[in-house]
Length: 421
Image (cartoon, rainbow, N blue to C red; front, side, top):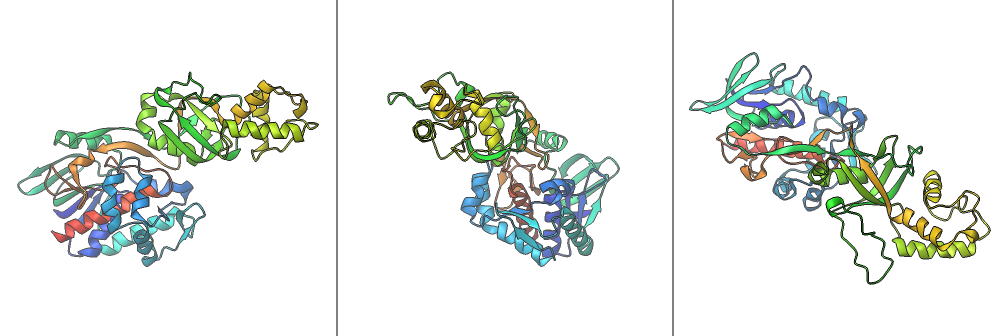
């Protein structure tokens, strides 16, 4: 018999337990972990460095990084957000650093620092960590919650589910009346075999990437006539794009995969994107600039001219795709070739033929319907004394420490609610 049982030995589960035990040391608390190891996702996140949170300290801006959960997280983030996370780790001997892109890591650059911190605290605070305890059933009775695992049965007054994207737990919740939004992948990279990006892995540059409604690209986006109507993309991202052996990755691609998780799932991960490799220009603006280059650099070959800030290997591939030979000089290329080059640079249409796991993050869009949760307490609106924390909810974020922040905040809010009762 425990006062509180937390199912799930991950980030949200451990943080909930620690906050509970710190706030009310008299509570008898247990964490049930289905596997042999705890905090597995913490260990591998951020390339093994653990990106604990992000240096966005305004809750109103912080929530903008959540494709699902933006509205619901606003209140909780006014209670516990990035600055509070930093204070917690610093208080418990984990020094943190903010990198140029805003991501926050332990100074040690090792996720083991975070794991050791949590394991030491749970031990010190008397939290029972029960491994090899996969939950097979739970139900609410007159005595409270009864939980069955593959080995034992337990009872508790309050039950916290922090099981992440666990289909078995979602199914058990469905049986008890909760609505579960179907899980689909989020945070993935794009598989693309186009010759324009083939053979140049490692090339990275800032770009704008767009996807258009219904994946129909018959009407060229190029605005060549003033009377022509422009179309608005359904998905848009800008930022660094990394060309890989299998296709495209980088922050801009990961943003698209997060915001477009359900749309791209509906497309079965076969769709077209438009990439503007020159984000400071549109088609017409760049065409005008290229005409000036043609006049000024007429005697130079197009291939060897550093006319634009674009990686050399990418420039070579795009020049070739424009129908321009390596020996062609600016003075020799015709109007069509110049227009082709402007289009390749600002409206490069690439076919995506699948997705690849972004190995630093395992995130899904889906989970417990947010309308069925009271976000002042993270308590179920349908079942008594049942709480949720972390990715079990239909909340997910772009990469950069935001998914962990959701876990820390959920754990804090749950602990605050339980210790008040």
